[in-house]
Image 1 (cartoon, one colour):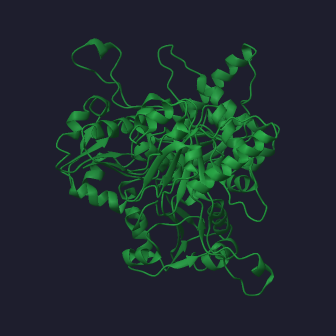
Image 2 (tube, chains in turn brown, purple):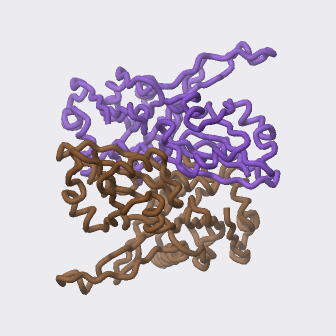
Image 3 (tube, each protein chain N blue to C red):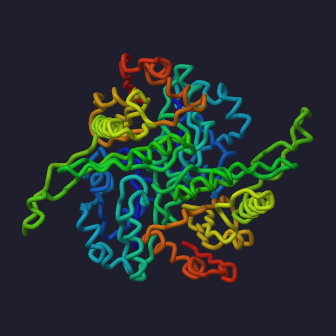
Length: 292
Length: 292
């Protein structure tokens, strides 16, 4: 049997009881470590599970399906995935490859950022399409996510922006070489994401495009959702460009133009929110940063 | 401390290790049992946790916040919630009431239907706004959810439809009486939801309204997602009106008009999908029903 097991978002103990039992029954256990990360690190997981994990990078998961699936017709093999197993296309693909080979696949679900963002008080059913904000690298500066955010906004929906992560990415120079060299890991912060959004808005303004979202729009920065060091911050987009929420992972929310009373009330937990929402000059307010 | 702990979607063992530890440390543990249900039942949960649970109905959760929160400044009290704690507005409200009273609140996340629907192979980031389909009762026949589905569809997004559940709802007759009488529990099936959608479409057609979704549109029926008896079915909306997926809970998905190749490939797992997608007369095909 091939298992794909979600680890949730926080630390070792966010695995389900079912997931933990399966891990203990497996011959080999892979840890997918490039679409997301757990704050606690691989060693802490190994200690908690009482067994060795095989760290699976992009090459192994995307091109080494046969290696991962080997022997899983007769024995148990598991792939551990931060969040929920179906959070990334690549895991869906792996499940398909397994079934092609006649291997039974079972999934153990867990929390993902898609539902855990509810921690900021915005109603999950009022989110529109989720967008991904990629790093701008070497002149490649895609901006189509701005239009998706705008569309959600004009449809009165919130937008969850997932921020890029780069783990074990080969350098451009080494792509053609035999021995790959890797760039240092990078995780996009709410500050970097806001800066990119502000640049897109500036360009659109200059070229006369309509601008649904403006720099004074309120936004919500989230860091390490589901962990003990989780932080939630509410301020204007312009202010968010200067906010430091600490270590990864970060997410950014652009809320709908009108909030449900319960949503507004919940956001008040984060200092200065009322002032920012009420103020005609929100950028004069300090941003708020609150552990939750 | 007041804890709101997600139980996930399947059985007893879908709780996280962290959640289980907290339950064992609590003075009182409430089980919220009206916005969703676990297939395994309360007794199985009590046996697994090794402790008694207090079943919390709508009255207690929505009007008895003080009773639930009593003593949680000095001792641990938990509310268990099927899925993820922020799946329902009422839990957000309870967290606010706790904080008003100076009680610290901690949330333990878990899988919710919002991310577990990924099990059908549709990409989670391509879902639009989630809709709820309510029971039509006594001439009250709301249909605004059809427009939301249409909007998602024309924006090339999938729609997850959450289906109504009625647990411990007082009868109309007993509402004014001292002693409330309750209706039998009901859980909307994919068949009932499809029938309501078809009725709305018929009415719109008759009154000359534009019709984005038609009765031959493909849809996906899901039952007991995350449990061992999970079922996923793909067929036309017209056919779904006659499909029986067994016990609760059910959900219905209306996919976007165009699917990603990986989504199409994954849906092929469910018999007859290709025929339905390719056929000009899909209703002549048998629907497919596959345990996953």
